[in-house]
Image: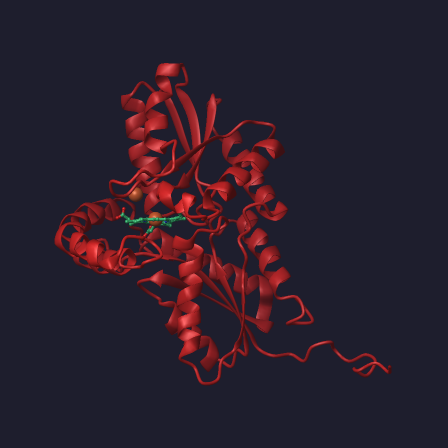
Length: 337
Ligand SMILES: C=CC1=C(C)c2cc3[nH]c(cc4nc(cc5[nH]c(cc1n2)c(C)c5CCC(=O)O)C(CCC(=O)O)=C4C)c(C)c3C=C
Ligand SMILES: [Fe+2]
Ligand SMILES: [Fe+2]
């Protein structure tokens, strides 16, 4: 058969391509009203709280949304930056850095699953800019229905309303990708080298989820364990894996980060370094829960040295890793990617 494309022809014509980075979401401001609006949307997501709405909604509206927003707003106020919520500010910086790395062929933007800028809003903006092909990139290394799936659901729902849809791809979870493990290894090595003490333990703290979600078949727990194992092997140092941010009364994944930190000094471990490999950007859960409250609690229980090592964020190592992962997904879509 003769070749279907004339010799020298590019394999694919050059359509306009969009890359939409997505993350969890955050309130518009560190005030009770904004946090209440955000938590109402977040905690009404049936991928996040897997309790039948007839039982859950009265608890959410009657109890949780009347108590938690004020407490959470105080926590957000402690970490709020000049650029707004750290999660939003860092995701925006990641988007700008990747735009620089890809150049004019690819439009890079960012959106939040809950709150602003919303996924439907930024997808529409990409379509309006002429993007015919879009890569949705949920920035969660470990897959969880409560994070990866719901972010993609939101994008699919927006596309479901479009008469003229763009073509779509999604970034798969990258918990065991050599580029991710290497980025974590380099970032952790640099973070440890900058300390003025030698930690006796390195704690890898992942966001938790209900134990029941694991039993229903969600791979998140296994993904976290594999990330920590590969990183430990790469560095030749064991990692203490823990799960943080417990919410509600149900049993969550264990061991819990707070209980583990509090128990270490009694075992003779008074110097620790902690980091959060499952978070692609620092946020409330890392800056307030780990770096502020985790430290206080560890020291109250006899700890003497505590270091929080930041996430990959928009640092060079993290951006290069994301560029590699995204470029791989764009293969065949653009001759230059
Ligand atoms: C209610 C159940 C929750 C599940 C399940 C859950 C899973 C989960 N979350 C992240 C990442 C983040 N969560 C963040 C905040 C946050 N998470 C929950 C609850 C669940 N998370 C709440 C109620 C909150 C809000 C803050 C609070 O009131 O305490 C954030 C930070 C957002 C920010 O604005 O900085 C991230 C990121 C993952 C990876 C995950 C997977 C199991
Ligand atoms: Fe969460
Ligand atoms: Fe928290």
